[in-house]
Length: 240
Image 1 (cartoon, rainbow, N blue to C red):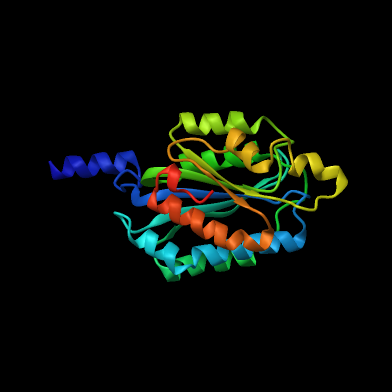
Image 2 (cartoon, rainbow, N blue to C red):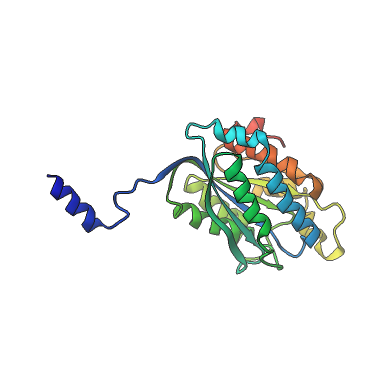
């Protein structure tokens, strides 16, 4: 019998005997690097991600999970054909692994300048989740940006596909208080960007949108957002 089992495993290939690695959550950070985000704002975004992921409260939330680990990937997007997986899947379980992730993120150059295709960012995140190789009860896409979708298919269509697959999509809407004239409608749509994100980006179980009034506040907002996502707090407790 042992010989038969061994033969079957060999025939099935080298990955057949390897179970998927368990984590509490698979999370794709999807970040807007379109032309409405200037270089200083881009650096504030990356510094905000680093501050959030290295925050002791976030580390405590990760360690408090059933497994005590989450898997994170990081994607940057501009136009519909400008999407880059900057960091593929990495497991974060403690301060050291969080620092490794953020050090790699800090050293990565900006991927694009261009239009804004939130839908392309969500679609790339969905492919990453499908191919992650992790076993997770929760799958989350975290979209951060300062404008509406103006390239590729509708953001709501990509969001709806994600939700239908059991994925939660959360949003972080960065409010541009002083836009240049040609970007005004893009960054300040009727009803405001936060409401636009609620209607077109966020969806799924416990989904929420966090509003940031200025780029320097990105880090604290992302910290609160990650704590809610990792701890799976109900939507009504999310910091809106």
